[in-house]
Image (cartoon, rainbow, N blue to C red; front, top):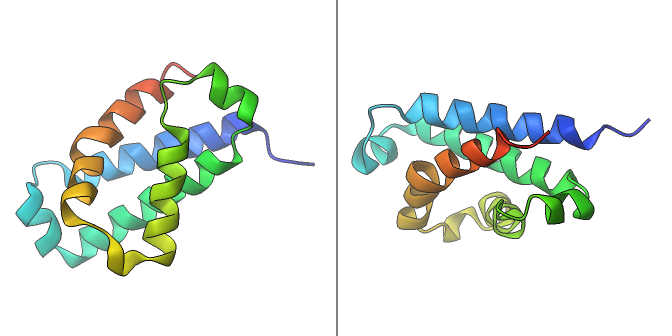
Length: 109
């Protein structure tokens, strides 16, 4: 039996919560200086992207405020071209995009 899409949305929300909790009180310098937090956050960002890729297209269209394609694309770069990750983009995702995504996911039923 295939996993229901809303469970993937819940996985995304839980990973967003972890990213925000792990980075609480950190600035960009602190984040990149802390190898343990950096690794844990990148792991959760990849979980967000993998789960996003499992949400059906019709659901993605229904919740078009979520940047589904960009989330999946970030996951692909983080997993397969990690040496190509731009620090500024990573920090923007953590500090701005993840909180926005978290708020959007709260509206998904």
